[in-house]
Picture 1 (cartoon, rainbow, N blue to C red):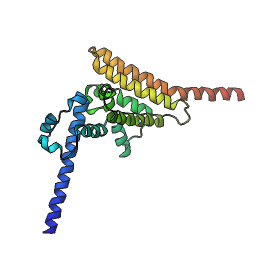
Picture 2: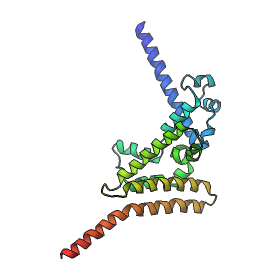
Picture 3: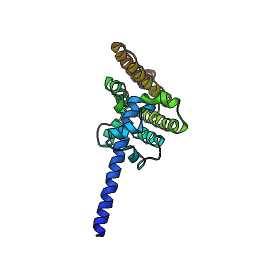
Picture 4: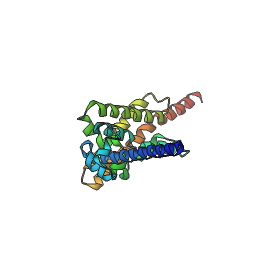
Length: 216
């Protein structure tokens, strides 16, 4: 009898966890597609096949759902990290820039970076979600900074510029109606950022060459 009880309890808990994750995934997609105001509890629960009453078995409030969904929303850089952690290609500055500034990312915000999709909404929102945005932004800056040469004195500044330029480029590329211009925004930003990262290496190479000339 006890074994059956624990089996049922374990199965029930596992089901609750899976349902919770399903709600969060659906909310994360809605957030990025429709903004902070686009996550209505009734519509969300209908989408996942549950009642509104069932929502409060998983979350204390809508704000709690929004916060968890924002954390769970994986953008292009999160996906690259996941691949690298699974034994795939290592992260490079170039791969980060290339993954973010794409037409696919532009066209599918529901599966993209939550910051580029929500930053304008969050700027006008409460402290909780703004704090989460701050943490995520710092994490992305650190990721980019670590992908640049360790002896690059301007690495953090370049990382900050890369984050802000990439976010702005994707937002603007989504907003304009001219598709040629939209592609140019992405391609030009990608090209310039990659040139920026390579300048330190080029300068060092020139310095080495100059040193050789003096010693010859």
